[in-house]
Length: 58
Image 1 (tube, rainbow, N blue to C red):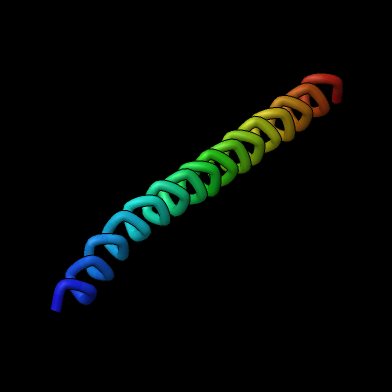
Image 2: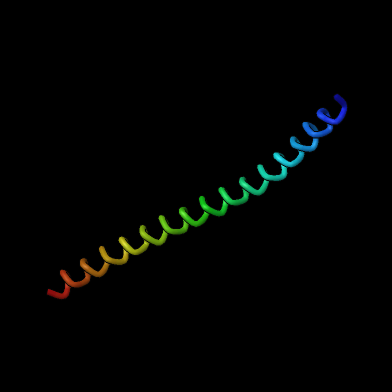
């Protein structure tokens, strides 16, 4: 009976450790996605500026 309780206890600790790692991975993923979104936005802005400049030259 006692052994089973010990196993449960250690399992909880392991899960907490894994949860920490998962959270870090999720944060990294979100950060990368956020950076990609920002890059796309800036690229779109630059394209619009180029189009405006070309129209003004004509």
